[in-house]
Picture 1 (cartoon, rainbow, N blue to C red):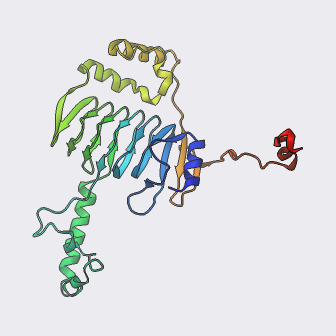
Picture 2: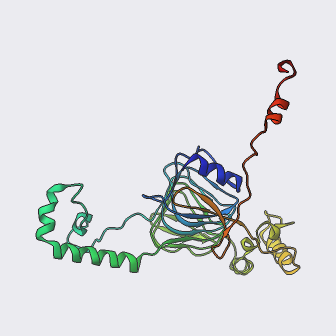
Picture 3: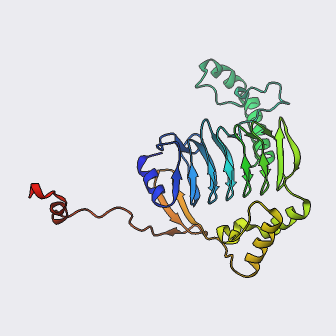
Length: 288
C-alpha cells in the first residue's frame, strides 16, 4: 500500500497495527478496490475482500484473504488466516493445474503438448472453470465473529453472526450463527448460548445499531444484556448505525462513498500551507 493511501485512510478512521503499510496489499495478485466501514483496523496481509465492516480488526503474520465477499461488523480476526485457496479437480485424470492450460510460460517444454492437444486442454479448462463458478462462490463472514489464529476457510462457505472458530481449524462447511466450531475438519462443538438467547440475538441484530444498542449493557450477563438491548431498540435509544464508507481504489486513491455507491465529497484534511508571516512567528526570539 502506498504511504499516501495509508495517510488518507488514517484521517478517515481506518487504523493500522504492526505495519507501516508496505505489507498491506488490497487484492491477491493485482491490486483491487475495497470498501471499508470506518472505524476498522488493518494489520499486515493480502485483502481480496469486497467489504469490511466497522469495528472489525483483521490481518497479521502471513494472512491471505482470498475470494472474500463481506466481513461483518465487530469481528475479531486473528493472524495467519488463509481463505479461499485454489481447489484442484480430484476426479480428473490428474489434479495438476497444468492440464487446464496456462503453464507454457513457466515450462516452455509444454508448448508442443498444448498445441497437439488444444481441444482436450480447452475442455478441461472450461469444465474446471464452470465447476468453480457454480460450486464455489465467495466467502461471507457475519457480524461479531471471532476467528482464532491460523484458521483455514474453504472458498464458498458462510460463517454466521456471532460464531467462534477455534485456532488452527480447517473450515470446509457453513458455520451456523452463534456456534463454536473447531477441528480438522471443523465441526460443531456447541452453541455459545441457550437456543432462546440465540433466537433473540438473531432477532435484535444489535450490530445494525452499533454502540447505541449497547448503552448500559452488562456484557458479563447475557440474559440482562439481551433485555437491555431490546429495551434500547424499542425505546429508540438505539439508532441504526450509519458508518463512514471509505473506498480504496485499485490505483491507491481513496474516496468516501454512500451506500448507493455515489462518491461523497471529502473534506480537505491537509494542513494549510504556512505563509511567510506564519514562518516568522515560529522563529525563536534569538533569531529575530
